[in-house]
Length: 108
Image (cartoon, rainbow, N blue to C red; front, top):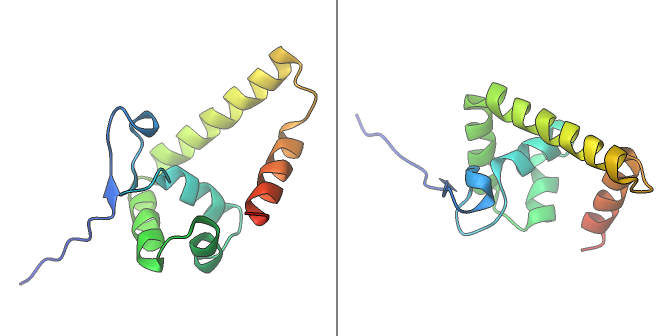
């Protein structure tokens, strides 16, 4: 039997908070998972981040193998963002912030 390994996913404790990311990029599995869970297709993610389909599928494979942990991290990040906005009086809602980020991505 031959076992193949696809080496797209790496982790470094001093980069991107140690989160797994696509090698030679700053794009984390969390970034890919969040976009995928918000309804983006693999092709849309490929185009948005200028990745290959193989890179996106490798990130999704990693995500599905570690889904509970990554989903909890994403939820924690969302709560921290909401808390920051509430405490610092940033004049926009989380939904508005997300809309602006999506608009920025679309105009890249």
